[in-house]
Image (cartoon, rainbow, N blue to C red; front, side):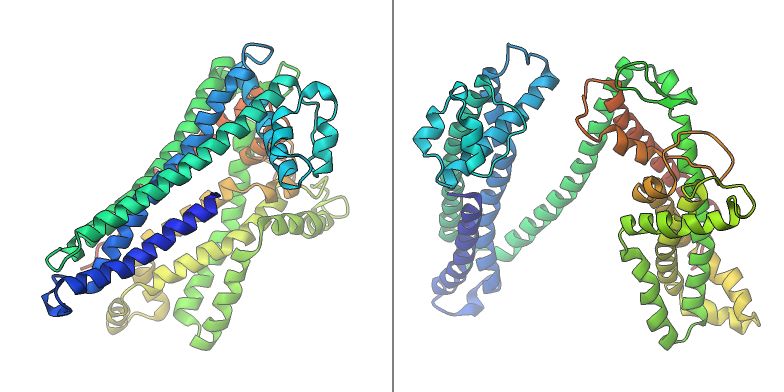
Length: 487
């Protein structure tokens, strides 16, 4: 049974269990609902939860474990020859899955029967033509070990799918039967349901934490692998970025960090004043009619894709700056792609993040504080400067931090607006690049993950992670240092 049918079946069993649980609970007290310990809906939810949760958990675990186990069972067919290296074997397994999917497509299209797919040989010279008739394009010739592994992969996957369906449905039926058996008028269904919901909430929180941990560990392990083959001192202190996949690369991060921080500072210099002043106007000065129009119009900027901002930087802002600072003006700018171009456009992109969050924080300041300030004779501007802004400072710092994190992690605006030159320069009208742009360029194409030129992307990502963590710690210090306490 396909995955979606299995999922639909256990959802149907859970829905059936909901109605059966309610009916059984009422029937157990002779139809007198007042004798039930809990509301009858809790009995139905209890049955549905015990039917769905174990089966769904088994299904998720099975879907995660099945590909790993099947590939482990298949890997011996492609190991021990010219693909003994672990990383190369990983690439070969990609070909195995591709050929297996091609055979599935050919069988589904009627080009091959199951028997033909199992007996097909690589030396027959027909595999490319056969799969091509089914619309499957193969980028290279299929070797005999790869084809044999693909056929075994299909067989094991089919058996695992059948076993998965039987196991999941059996667990769902067992849960349904067990929960119906324990359902009676004295059963504390509400307590059990609330404990179950609490467990689901804890599980959701754990998933979020484990996801973060998995991201960090994936960066850490690959970063350690990079520093095994490339000196850390040259990575952190070299001022030259010159990757060469033929060998002899110089992978100094300092030019990339400089470009990242330079562009981000220009963006924040644009976004923070404009966004904060816009938030103050919308929350303190604008009428309800103006606010109802201006705030949604401002937040439209947040919904524009970053690739559109990148095109705007490349086609509009860059040529406009060239007219003023280029050869036709002051002569400071040699091309439209420069730090200033990317910084201005990125600052425009960040305005909604600063203004919207700051506006919400300022509106959250109690009205009693404003009234008290006015009662002491302060003007509106004095109230804003001495009462509202200090009270809203933690939220404003958080908004600025969010904008800074977004600026540091931006890619498309940098690629199209700032250029690709890795240099350290104080001239904002020169082309530079950032860490994120180089992560993309190093992992574009067929990357060999045993080379420092590809693994450096993970070291760059780890550096960005540590940098963002440092910004969070600094923001926390600023908030605690300058926050004013109110009763």
